[in-house]
Image 1 (cartoon, rainbow, N blue to C red):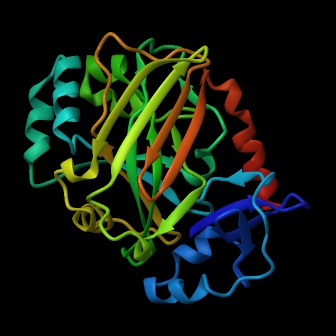
Image 2 (image 1 turned 45 degrees about the vertical axis):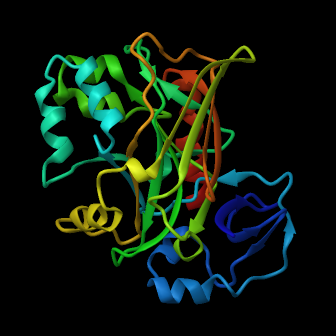
Length: 296
């Protein structure tokens, strides 16, 4: 089962439960934000109250976050990430220290309206020249700080910008098409152990594989609930939050994304996220237009 958003025949967003090849709307729920305001126990009840199922094939999927929802990221949570950040950076010590520090690195990635989903493009900056995907387990937390589900995230990153100075992290991480989430959220009660999931990525260019990688969330150094607790300590998230938990897959320094590359990220039990790389901000003008349409 996955919690999803999709577009109705009238063009309005619908929140539903996808099971296999069909999806059914959740009765009395108009947005993901409404679901994310529920306690975990109430959510488990809410998703059992569904309407008539329809075939999933042919539906337009929307990002599984809306309203005042936000996506945040945790950084340097895998040994591979620490090594890659140190390799690319002129200021290596900060990454070595934060890997084992009591306080994790947390930063805001995108508000709900800037998020893209499966089948939509992801972006690279025109002023970067060295960009990579970051395949990550994303933890979904409700407004009460409870973990209610998991999904797949691509935390796009500019290695060249961050490598010059760690203070440039916001520019290396926050840009048009920089955050992609799979279309479905797997409920937490259906995942036995989120710290034992295999993550795979395949990047193709003109039909040929140019990079593959794999890791396991077992290598994640941070506890998932503790990351959420630190995030909620100074902040309220009235419509919930999705936290990408860092990457354990980073290509070697001689690899960089190109426009037209296709990135496919898969996480056991959660699903798959596929996006094609676009250059610059213009290909993402549809996000603002889509957000205005949903508010009407």
